[in-house]
Length: 443
Image (cartoon, rainbow, N blue to C red):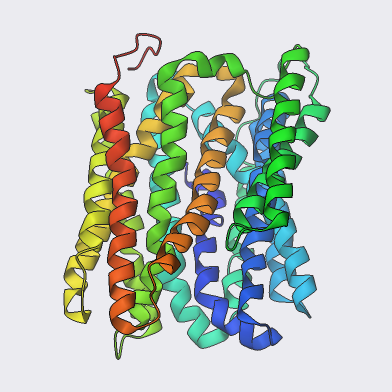
């Protein structure tokens, strides 16, 4: 588990890149809006390929795909750190997205495949704990590194971590080879194109225009063709029949929405902290680590709770706590309210930790064991889609509230977080009103 966690951690550590944005803009002499492509090129590549990589892992073995991911990531981090110009940096970020997609698509499946099925939930809890550790270290530790070594530190210092994970992964047991199955290459291409156009349409929502409409139409067409393709082939990438199960469909929608609301912290909290006089970059990074620290604390607790309670109840508790934490953040006013901010972020992180473990427990219980790669990739893909949607929608809400003046900023900040808090609250209300399904063995 330490080996899988080490390789996985290099992906959530990418939250450190946000801290390096000002230095990257200054180094390459960029207009500020251009920095968005640092995120778009990486997230778009990762999300578009993740489900196909998960299916490849089901066919070729999770260990093999994880090895490829750590190797590609090592090379990508070196290329990013040494990029001579902005175009080269963006190209390296695309390669980094490929590496991240390979790692995340098979990380949960690799972890669960190493242990008996009755330990699945505990293993998933440990996996989410290590994912949370990576998220916490990103803004905290790398804030110090960027301040001392410059923007390239957010990439250079991850290269040896990925390389160590690559070498150690060779020590994991080789899987027993199963029956060879064909890979739906046409479906993979259609899915990648559809997801790419969808993410580009979301990115162009601020402000919307003709390209937004074109990308949206292409995304809709791509998803329709992918749906048709998956019903034609005997071995599809995704079995759409699984979504007839109400719990499975709702928990996947919930995963996207709860990550949408959670991104309000990384999107807006840095602007709030930058307005506090005398607050250094490393201290701001430590404050931003409060949410993933809550996830670290909650994930093993969720693993224990899953032995006594149904995962649907744990997901419900996670939604409620996430909503409470986001609403608590909206109560922040001046710099004197930092304890309220930190406590609220920690509560939100606890909610996320409970929800994520319950989510993976439900999904992996429904999806057949031979397709665990797709199950894990689906979780990470819906997470990424929620994050990208949150970056666009929440920023649109924030900007529409007129944050130009100091008083206007605080009003927009507080209102946006209250809106974000309604999303997990609505999920909780939806779950309470739904009839209990008997289709999922674990709840």
